[in-house]
Image 1 (tube, rainbow, N blue to C red):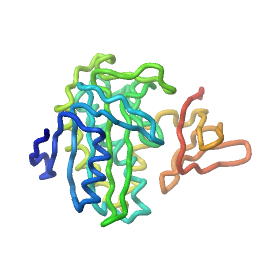
Image 2 (image 1 turned 180 degrees about the vertical axis):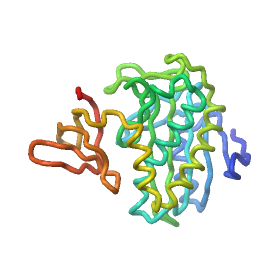
Image 3 (image 1 turned 120 degrees about the vertical axis):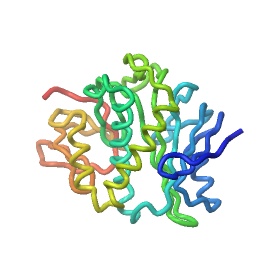
Image 4 (image 1 turned 45 degrees about the vertical axis):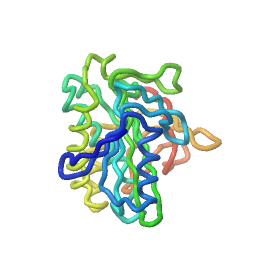
Amino acid sequence: MNREATGLAGVRHIAYETLGSTNAEALALARAGECGPLWITATNQSAGRGRRGSRWESPPGNLHATLLLSEPSPPTQAPQLSFVAALALHDAVAACAPQLGPLLKVKWPNDLLAERAKVAGILIEGESEPVFAVAIGFGVNCGAHPNDTTYPATDLAAMGALVVPDVLFAALSAAMETRFAQWRRGQGFAAIRTDWLKRAAGLGEALQVRLPGRELSGRFEGLDENGQLLLAQNSGVTKITAGEVFSFGDR
């Protein structure tokens, strides 16, 4: 069962009670000719997923939302949307739970932390036919979080902030509109990069990055002009396009 409405800034919104995955639904609609922009939310996901196919626990009481966009930018600029989305999510959570604002950090490439525990994740996926389309999925632990995760997790309620999904979604949809306008299809990425770095977890610290088949250690020096992580090592600075930061060290 679902209902469709027009949300903030005129963006359509389809709300489901139960869905396998909001991202999967968005991509299926894109393949069927849906151009968006379109928000899809679900009270519960039965097959929520994170990066690299990992399971994302999606109980009622948390926010599960996806924004579908068609041709948001040239395909080469589309990876920058992870930074746009992370800033919008940071803005939305800080607006709904201002007491947590100073504790919130963005973790490269697309997680939101509260006191260094993961409170939300972002999954960006794309389709090339019939047009280039991007699904930006948000999973926010509002009232519950998983245990026994490889990276520490928490939820907003556990941090003392009672934020219901509908209120957070309204703030997120507004913040996404603002940050998307700032980005300007990639032309405004320099400003997005600057704002992201102001909120970055672990900047200037030692960290470890997990890549397919290997791990790298170094110091987080920042982002290059394309959003690649700059990892300072004894041999020089390594640019990392995709990977997972899984531990921070000391300054």
